[in-house]
Length: 220
Image (tube, rainbow, N blue to C red):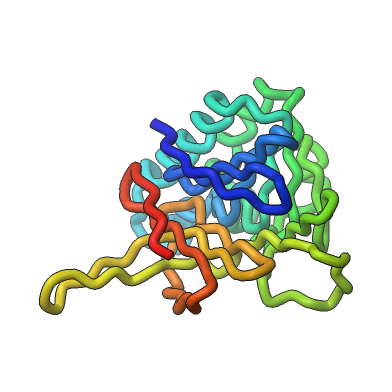
């Protein structure tokens, strides 16, 4: 079940999903980051027995969102794939072949090391540095500032795998992935559940939406 909350930026409607994605209503675009497809296969090649089911569950969430939201485009803000080619990538390609009309744009992340020919054959548009639509810029690393911004630009990034620590009674505490909004930037949670968390320390003006199972909760 895709439970979402609305966040408005520059009069544009962005639906934040408990499934770690954003749907940009006006552009009919699904936005995700850090899917890390192929990561479990990479670990298994190194002799670490990570069950392939972990990857299949991430892939199934991705497919289900695309089916439910019916976007015209999927925008991946880096680290779509995790390693060199392996069988897990082939599972993705089998699905992609059934959705030839769906545009997928990838802003290249540090783990996207497949050759350009692979992306071309897969029908994926590859962007090296950043991608802009109107006032919105999409780049993998939130700290990247090598290129001048347009006035009033808003940046969507990934890379960090943001998380928030929520303290309970006594010394109890839990960590949750989150959408982290700063003044002119949103850092998306890692789509892959096979990823760590970097705890953020929001300032008073920041906004944080925590993801707990199938729920998304606005904290600040």
